[in-house]
Length: 179
Image (tube, rainbow, N blue to C red; front, side, top):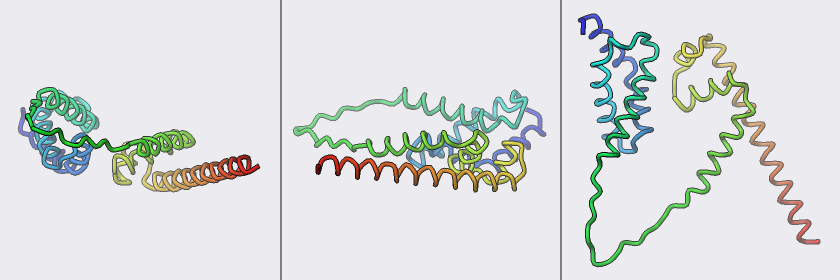
């Protein structure tokens, strides 16, 4: 790899390391494992850096490398069984409410226009800055801010209307049962 490409890679890592670490944290729960995952992905990407023609896609490339690496680690893990006299209590967390919240969020996001949805996802899910979001979507920072403001207001309205509708249904059900 040429010296210029090495410097370009180093600059890329310096400017994007926080966002890439956040992506790694979404893939593995342990912060130390997330750092290891990112470092492994960076080492693998360094060897292929000159092959990435469009450097604007480097984040996507690195995320894919992290996903593939995490999958390799998962497949290579050793499952160790430890014999014991007594079986431990098996408690299972009920994730029903979490799944319901996620389903509601995905459903509510459908009321947004595609541009609004993109801005909300990049700013709040990917935790990109306003400027990064503007660059990614090819719009000005002011447009990102106003689009985000309108999108969040629309989401609040939709959630409130659904909440009011659910309360009305509950009230009708109680009245029907009382009658």
